[in-house]
Image (tube, rainbow over all chains, first blue to last red; front, side, top):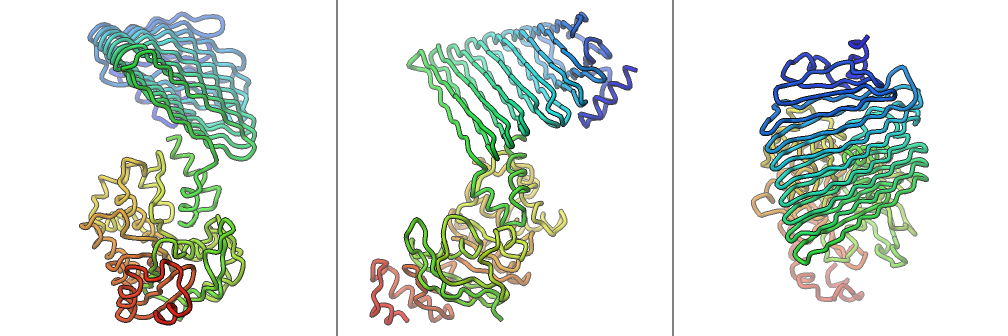
Length: 309
Length: 246
């Protein structure tokens, strides 16, 4: 049964599940509240407790460990509706390095609420990259609530990207807050396209100490009656902190979008910039593609595909 | 044979008359140039032929192979084989060069690679890059020309094809223009550069929304240099001056 579910998940994602047969690839596969697959690699501890409505996982990467191949994590909810609650406690110890490729797969007609509550500690000079790709059904019945508190120690580096690669949003409500110590680097990106009556809410906040750097980037496209609101904030408390908040939203049809980029600088030697652009598809881009033989809809789709790629 | 005829065309933009009763014939498989100073109406004429938004035709018509373009969208015009290269090509965040060129292309991958090499570019270095601010204006211009060559159009409007191009690349641009002609296309170059004018088989001088003179380059380039460089009538020609130039 587990193999069947994993195969279905990877078919939905469009990737080859055979990668999980590689002993050097760490992975954790969750369907609802059950662990259906798990593999560790030296230096990486994965401890999972099954809850009534999800799982509670503690993942620790030991000091100095560099995991060569990306760790695959998959959260799915096949053949069931209801709530899936994921509690994550992630510790990347000093000088350790890992990239995680996370897939959240909810492709069915079921009404699902996926709640992720994460606490992420990234030690001194450690690097943690978290790429989260979602596959949803076409029915707009999924609600996703990814929440995370991220703590970066000195010289740590955290990169995260959220992508909806297939299906309707339903409701996505992202809340990330990161606390960045000296010389650490924070990069948070979200790329989402909404349609129908989808709702997209994004709140990303970064606190930057001395010489820390941060970039919050959000690219959204909404059409039909979808709504999006983005609240991104960088707060610089240390000297020579640098950062940029960037939000681009394309609005089509009766969709509504709002963006609130906030920069707060509490040290005169810090420098934070912001840029927000909301509007329909750029006229020149559209007309160029139409002059190359594309219909208006095809041209809009290609421009949006680029923005969200 | 005429591929395109502009007949008594007058056009307004923001309540200002930009084109004033213009008529001209564009011959099949020739390189035409329309030369004039800034504000003469050259780019607006190109926009009107392509059907871009932002202006209103108040009189006249544009015929392509005898058929009116007036009520056709940009897309419909491009399907008939008309396309336009912008003075400053658009930037697209995230859109790969490969996807931009593939969309209109009637060529296979190796033929597209040959076009890159013709433009002095290594295809492997560019195909997976985004058409964004990481590419210079000149690089975007050459990529735009590759996309135009790849769609095998019948009529190509090139607005200031040498603008933003370094000296070493200008010859590549001219080579692409010649290639378009060899492929059977008709080209209209919008310019105020003598180097570009020299590529043309036939030239129109435009000023204040009117066609002032037309003819072979040997006849028209001296007129342009004598009467328009610098502009003797400050973009406001009276009838006498028009007469002199004609």
